[in-house]
Amino acid sequence: MNPLEIIAEFYKPGSESFQILVKHGQQVANKAIDVAKRVPHLKPNLNFINEAAMLHDVGIFETNTPELGCSGKHPYVCHGYLGREILEKKGLSQHALVCERHVGIGITAEEIKLNNLPLPQRDMIPISIEEQIICFADKFFSKNGEMARCEKSVEDILNMLRRYGPDKVIRFQKWMRLFGHH
Image (cartoon, rainbow, N blue to C red; front, side, top):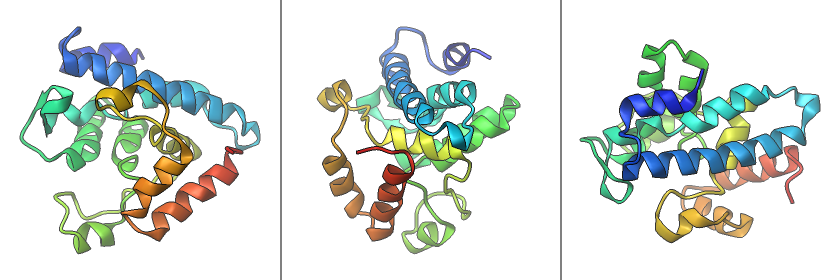
């Protein structure tokens, strides 16, 4: 399976959104592979990580996010479950779960209800080691403007996560220990 062929089905090659998505996917895939290689005892599937990291944001075209070249009808927070639907239709059920579960640092059904988020009310938390690695790696990169050029610091990531509650910070710190990231 070639992730770029799948992306090209939904994004015009060379378009702003295509370029943003592919660049971000490559950044996340490279970081995720590096992380995965540090934890061989957890037996992460490197090929799957590469594919799923490239595809984790495939649903952004269905969101109304002009800064990413996307003019869909949904809020950005929906891109995960929309990506899941896209990849499930293509028979990529495991890749689809990565799409849904990477948003934020994972969102619970309770959080969706409490915050009245426009999402299906179900837990969207990374479960498999591959899902966790991709979600972790994704936090280091932005798709927007200048921020897209470089990797975020751990301090910047933790500051951003604090807005969403201490449990998000704790989850990220747990992953830092698990993945030997200092």
